[in-house]
Image 1 (cartoon, protein in one colour):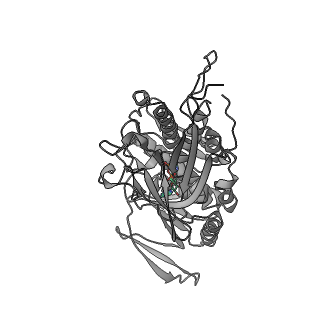
Image 2: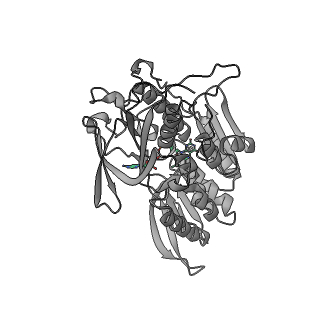
Image 3: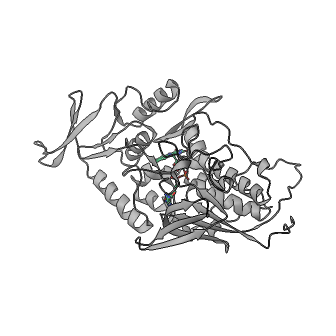
Length: 418
Ligand SMILES: Cc1cc2nc3c(=O)[nH]c(=O)nc-3n(C[C@H](O)[C@H](O)[C@H](O)COP(=O)(O)OP(=O)(O)OC[C@H]3O[C@@H](n4cnc5c(N)ncnc54)[C@H](O)[C@@H]3O)c2cc1C
């Protein structure tokens, strides 16, 4: 076992804001490193490698999240189509074995402000009446993006979320005139395809204002064309170059039922019972951070080490990662988990006063793995475009990536050995 460093009579207090892919990765990789173990999301040791001696530190990790559990965000399109999956996609923090350690505590609350100079965060808990000051030595911000309904459920408690998802699912099931998903980005594509997969009897239409799906993404046309092919194969109707103007409530003359008449700017009209907007721009959840660490859109201007930008007071003790940072590449959960490992490594170095041995994040090229019903499309430079059921299996398993993420983060328990 690695030696405990001499000055570790001291316990480092680490505050992690956000208990999702990025935040949990930072917390649990740090937990591994501070116990002298290999970090669970770090590079796998090769056969014959000498065991790495890592200094151990006493650390208290507090994770604050507005939700009462880990929500598998990637699974949202399926969680909002299938009640059985909705139950699986949200695991309360108290039911996650890896977090049940005496030095890890999870608080349900919303961080309102952070003062890097005094290293204090203000957290509001409960119904907003209790404000608590939390003092820390190191801060990891992993608060992601604020996303609108129905892209993401808005409930903060599992119980409430199951009602929210259930109501949405039941409304879609009754939709005799069909469901229209507006927005042909990655989220809209997955929402339409998952709904059709779970409810094949429903008429599902995906509407996009541009002439190609994924038009906002910096991806080659071959990825966009392959995605369209798979969406059509999944029996989703696709209307490209159609911009929704308004939805009018009417009574259908034929069925006598109330429904919506959709008006498109090109004059096209259609009936639907439910319209889900997958178009609103998500905004970084960074209002609690000082303005000078943010860019004009609200993303954190991190250094390659993930530290806050200079000249923030105590910049190297404040890290941000995941969707909330300004960095190249498409926002992905794989990137958030990878950055969580980088953050843990760099904090462990910082505990050793080795700030010159930080890991630096490289530029990330555009890459994507997109689930479209039973198949998936993947693209990254070097590999090019692939699609099919085998791609689905490799990228998402059979539960839209829940088990893959759960295992990668080692949430089921302390499976890593030194
Ligand atoms: C529908 C959908 C499908 C997707 N599909 C894929 C996919 O197939 N593959 C892929 O790689 N990526 C996918 N993504 C993107 C992926 O989900 C994100 O990249 C990933 O969630 C980023 O992780 P994160 O930890 O940075 O942030 P998040 O997952 O957004 O987590 C942030 C956490 O911070 C908490 N929080 C926010 N503000 C505060 C505050 N002030 N105080 C306390 N807590 C706070 C939130 O409650 C949340 O739990 C998808 C996203 C969506 C919406």
